[in-house]
Length: 204
Image (cartoon, helix red, strand yellow):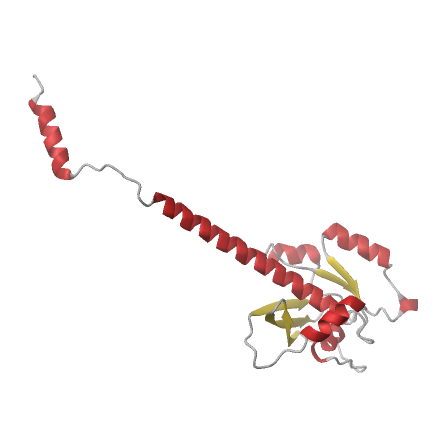
């Protein structure tokens, strides 16, 4: 597990239940059946691992509140049954600013590795995904992976908020530059008089 992250996480994970929640982030865990999605979620949300875990039926969710960059964030994490399609379908139906992380679980089962780390890294880079290897059993990298994901979501949200604020400020500035501009407008009475003078000067 990333030791540098651990020192920071230890301070940030303690959130007072009475603190005001600044954001609620929805995280959806998808993947093939039996890869350990429920166990990863359980390890992060409750620091638990169940050896007698059964396959998820339908959709379940758990929550955990954490503090990131001084903001209290409630992570609402949805655990799916595993029938969902993958990255292309996810991007096709989600917001363009979606944050996706590829997680290789069961890192403790070294002898049973199915996907080589190099292949996973290459795939993640090609797809523009964050990548991490975890072990729900030992807890290795589970905490840091979720924090990395939530921090990136917070970064994206903050950036969009800043862009909206800048856009609003620019719009306000444009309105301000119009103030004080003089526009000559001829009233209806003046227009009639002007038209009458034209008619009277007409030599027919």
